[in-house]
Amino acid sequence: MTVTIKLTSKRSQLQRYRELLYVLVERNLKTRYRGSFLGVYWSLLNPLIMTGLYTAIFGTAFAAYFDNSIIDYVLAAFTGLAAIHFFSGSTSQALVSIVDNGALLNKMKLPISIFPISIIGANVFQFSVGMLPILIVITLLKSKSIVNLIALFCPLIALCMVCMGIGFLVSSLYIFFRDLPFFYELVTFVAWMSSPVFYPPEIVPESVKNILILNPLLPIIESIRQIALSKDLPDLSLMAHSSIGGLIILSIGWSCFSLWRSQFMDLL
Image (cartoon, rainbow, N blue to C red; front, side, top):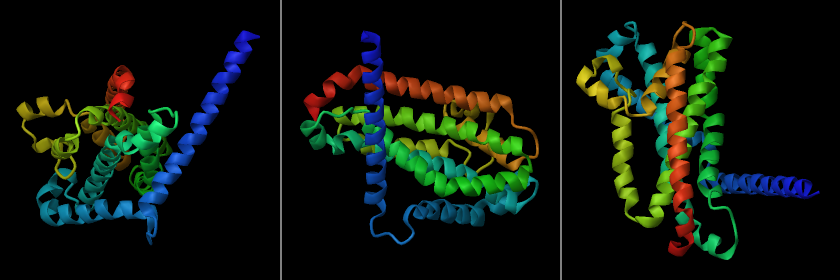
């Protein structure tokens, strides 16, 4: 009987958490795009403009690394920008999510973890209706393989895990250090420049590559490109590298969040 009661209680808590998550994701999206003409499709504007800009500046110079094709460079730049734009947007918004809801947490007993998770969830939904359909079309046209299409979700899931882990970490740190957003702008810029977004990784010196390999976005972007833009079967080593990196970042972020959670309410 006791075990049954505990299981029922856990199910009810899980149901409550799921319903609360749905409400917060919906609130985040409505707040972000209230009165907007294009809604979530505005998220496509930045990567498309940046792709055009990079192509105009670097397309001719870097086309040689993409089978002498400007089109292949455009697709490679877009896939890289899709990943880095999702990372920078979701983690920057997650950073302030707990502090911005401090007043609500002081009035109601809510699971604190729900706020960074809801931010990442809102961005996943935005990505799913904006970027993802384009990536799916690109994958089908370039690889012509249903295997590659299915495999595409592996590095994308790894990307979500990295963003979730960083989201837990920075949202926790922001409670203690309120000037963190200024520093985090620099972090996202470094992540952007150290990822092969607009340049081919072949041009990076070997001495620098040994440092850049610490960037968890690097294997994710490379895996997305290899799967989406190549006629070859998915590279299992790249997929494994991106997945393991995602799990490590998620574990670190959640561990820090759990360790510091007891101090949050005193500072909100």
